[in-house]
Length: 174
Length: 265
View 1: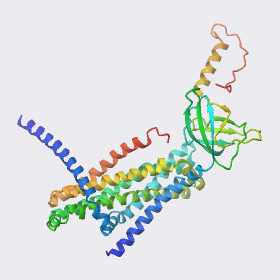
View 2 (view 1 turned 90 degrees about the vertical axis):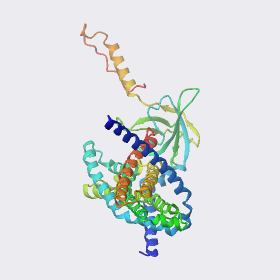
View 3 (view 1 turned 30 degrees about the horizontal axis):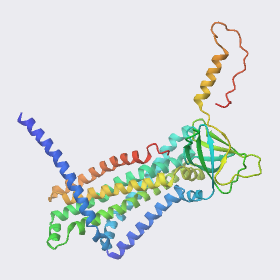
View 4 (view 1 turned 60 degrees about the horizontal axis):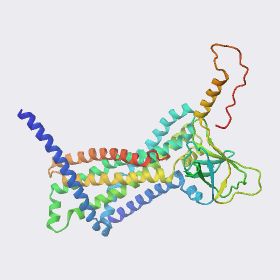
């Protein structure tokens, strides 16, 4: 095999190898949308508890992804979690937007849900979302439920009198 | 009594011998790196080695990638369909290939296809005293023979691993979308949503570079260190494949722990 042919084959090899890398980065790894992420604006929100929320988690409104979680850190004075959100530039939210920590499905990943309000003033870059609702902790819900049940019927084995108490509401804030 | 003593002596001898070889290998790597200048000053040498190691391994890498992707899709479907999560097929195929199977299987194939050839070539050069002849002509065999092969391997494997993953993802597409009938948009969309270019793809590339350095070093070292007989070259070739395979799998474990442990994947 002469030099020219070797050069040609090595050129083809390197070219398709780099093309494969590019394909992986762009099509599979979504490098393009990652760059798009850089545009947009940042908001912060304080939560009592964010559960298992992680950076790069989704921010959704009505089920549509409108941004990503940038970072989660702790306020050293108030011991609240500060979640930094990166929102895509095409979406604007009013000042009275409510941010909640949600779980997709029963055991799925956690994400931030934004519920738009009616205010005409929109949130700007580096603003705080004032109304937030923390993650629902299943353990707390269960313990609350058990505790309520125990209080309602102190000794069910001795007096089997029918207690007409309404079933406790579990949707309450933990 | 004498027999026990001999067993112990042999054991100690093989341990100290192994450690000495490890030290020699480290010194050898330093020498290769120091004498790499010639390789890049004369690209014809490097191109020939990339051709030998990379281009000639293309067919086996591409075919294996395609088949592994197809098998992944079939096996993944069997499990995912129980949970009604067949839309996640793209994610499953892409993550398995990019993170693990691409670098590891391409590395194993590369070690058997190209690493063994490197060892045999250098070992035979040593046996036929071509290396000694070069030294007589004041040509350093490490600079002229070893370093180009080392760098040829280091450059080729990451590209081969990327091609392996790409073909695997295409194979998964063929089976998952064309044969089984998963939605094409779900296949690519789930994949794009789950694979992070830095966390998954860059780490996969780093893995393949580390494997490339390990395999190439083992291959050229075993050839250079081979006993200059027909038997010695054959033993060295076998050692290259075995040691490379073990090195790939052990390094893969270490790298996976470093890269993906609790990193919020």
